[in-house]
Image 1 (cartoon, rainbow, N blue to C red):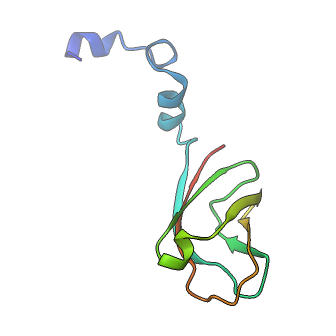
Image 2 (image 1 turned 180 degrees about the horizontal axis):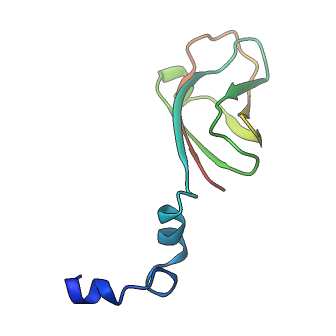
Amino acid sequence: MTISSLAKFNPSVDLDETERNLLRNEIHVSRGTMTITANQGTTTVSDAGVRAGDIVQLSPTSASASTESWWISATATGSFTVTHANSAATDRTFTYSVLRG
């Protein structure tokens, strides 16, 4: 983009919705680590950046986490809940990313 084209730049026309949201800081990313709670069927993760309806992505960081069946069963202001198998394993660890839904 040249200097002369910058003078004509109109964000409401020249950007797609994702780019406009990024400029308005509406696609917030929160990141962290979590360990699935042993001997429970759900684990609630507290994170002040989470809102209801956000998209949570988990990535396993241990061998036992990589074989785990899980899903994000709820998001709420300040937390999300992971539903998983009830196991005595204590090393089921993940990293997570939260994107504005």
